[in-house]
Length: 153
Image 1: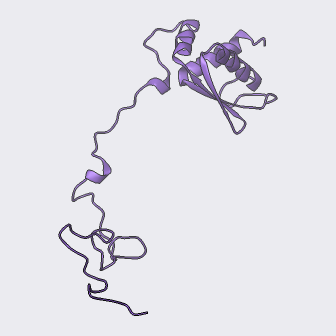
Image 2: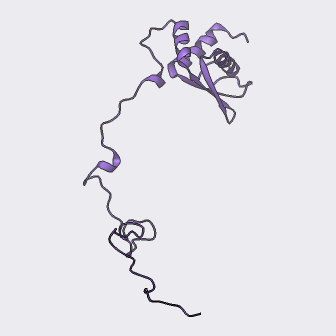
Image 3: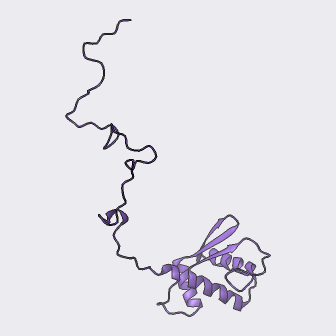
């Protein structure tokens, strides 16, 4: 399909800047929500990039989801005449805070115990405090019939 060069440039710039792109499968939509061009131009330009292996396409619930591949990154960088230092926003690693994991907060951040033992709605069961009816290794069977029990039928 013939797409005006200005529109193709807008599409390629957006795809390079974001690294991903979404387009609704509505070929009569007058304007794409993120790019100032027809939705048909966006879908067809992405279809062209997909056929050359520069974009990976995923289709779900009447929407196309396009993801830039490493080959596509190189192609668009050359097509847009950009230096190697510029990368899409999806390729930039975000700084992580150095906070400890949630379970390792210690005394200050620990949650208070619930009034009924913190075991959900049923509360604490007095007969099994630690686990599900666990016995120690040395502890034998305490309940049940005695050894000399002989039922008569």
